[in-house]
Length: 265
Image (cartoon, rainbow, N blue to C red; front, side, top):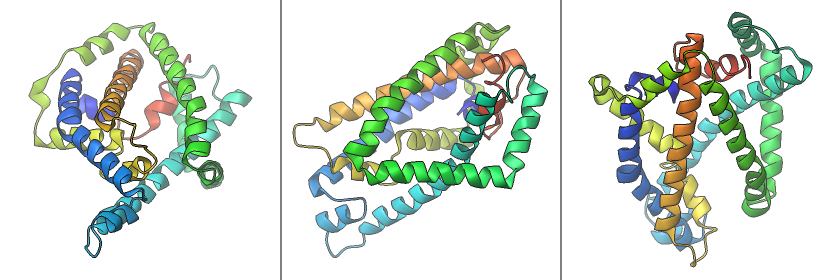
């Protein structure tokens, strides 16, 4: 998101991101929840249940394929995070400057053994959680991890705002620059909105199958969209001041997470 936001003029990114989320993505989220609850089936069988003997189930099949590809990417990044947790616990990334952190990141990502071991452990953790089911597995672990992540995000935001030149980054984020907006940036923002709300890959169809009739789907969906926007703003407020403080140029990769935020945090 930092890279896309920087390409789309900071504040102007979030204005367009907000409009796209509520005008385009939110209705799709509501639709996927409705399909899931009406069919009480997974992403593939939901379409078979509602429109049998048609090819609509390919939406679910392509969604599952998309989820597998996304999981493959996150497995690698998750492996890096596990490696950095170990580095933090052993003091390997403590009290070193940006240059050394960049070197550490390069060595970590280039190490095949570390990448494979970390990704494997990350995948095994996911398998253990998913095998417990949505309510006993995913929902239970989310009730623990999501609040922790939110608290850490607030902590990072406060720390970032206390850095030198932090206000320059905050002003860049708050001051929209629509001169950078074009068809390419609109597509990037659209993709980011779809990705952040996890729609378009039938993931929410499966989650929708667990919703009972007492759930107000439009209301819940709108709340999810608002919460997603709130977290996105917190992330931006945490990242842009830190970028300006350390003079780091946003890149379309994960290096910011592992280099910029490790300094002094």
